[in-house]
Length: 494
Image (cartoon, rainbow, N blue to C red; front, top):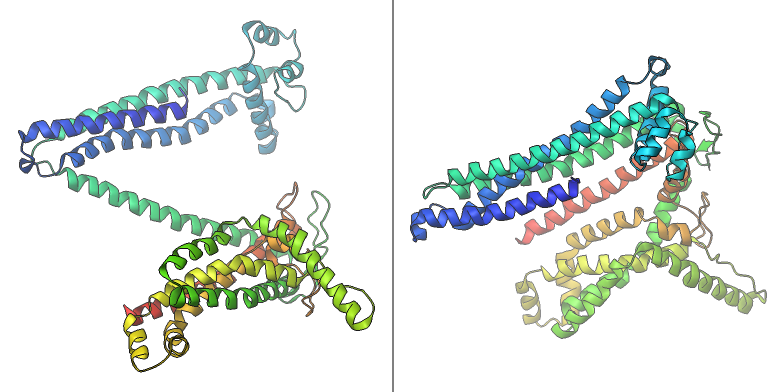
């Protein structure tokens, strides 16, 4: 029985258990709900939880433990001549055995007998069934593959039987516990609280795991390349080493990438902040409710457009447009029609990224402006100030901490952008001040360093983790500072 089918049956048992528990609680109440400690729905949920949760836990444990046990058993059955050649050879042989097992499952009895007798070639027979095998294959692999298939089939049937037995047993146990004064609500709420704790723990542990993995690989990189050279170097030229080489040839200066990241983000913020902030002020203070209910969702549609689409827009439309405009301006001024803005440039990426960031600035700022107490507006207008004076001298100063926090959150979004920069700003890692020339960012080089069939043994690939942890620290600091400002603003008025 497949895992998906087994899960479906468990859910079906839980569904039946819910109505069975609910019906039993109604029967125990004697027709009066006041006799029950908990509502019938809680009793049904209690029975459903006992029917599904233990069975799901057993299924998860079985799916984790069974492959480990089967691999260990098959591995111990391999010939001593294979086991004695080291861990790498043993793992390769085990992988080939699993490939042979897949092929054997597709063969009929005659084909399997031909392989066992040696009258058929193992590699050719499996290739005919769509299974590629590295090498010609050894006779011991057929026996080991048969053992693997048998153990896996037995394990799957045992798993199905045990899981279904646990589900039924849990359902019966829970139904027998139901009585008029049974505290089903307390039991259900305890399970829900535990589920919330587990969910929050998974999120925290995932973050810890990501940071730990990045730190460990970055530490390996810094054993090969000096941190001073990385953080203060002005030249980025990793020079990919040959496969299997661990040479440290190349220069890994972070400053060109960091400069490009901050430069493009700065240009994007210069474009997004005025437009987004003015749009937020208009939506919050001037627009009618009908216009606001229509225009704000339309503006926020920009946030749902994939960044690769923005990249295509920059590559096909914005970049060529700026290049042609620069050529026309150059011709009018100097008579020489030579474009001084490259199609792939900092300003191209900044403008398109700014368009992408407008809904972030607008939506966050609008929410903050609308949270300013109404009494401040009415007091200013009552003293004779115009609406524009009220916005400029009362509302914006009051909302300024929250707006600054929103802008910092938007900046952290800009710093982490990748696809727009790849297509709009190029991949040239260099330090320069002109916004009309190509530059690149940290995220682009992370993708570039990890593209292809690579091994994490050389600084040319491990540098991606050093770049990643650097970008993580930058965005983390921006987010922490933004949240600090936003919380301070909320405490002022709540």
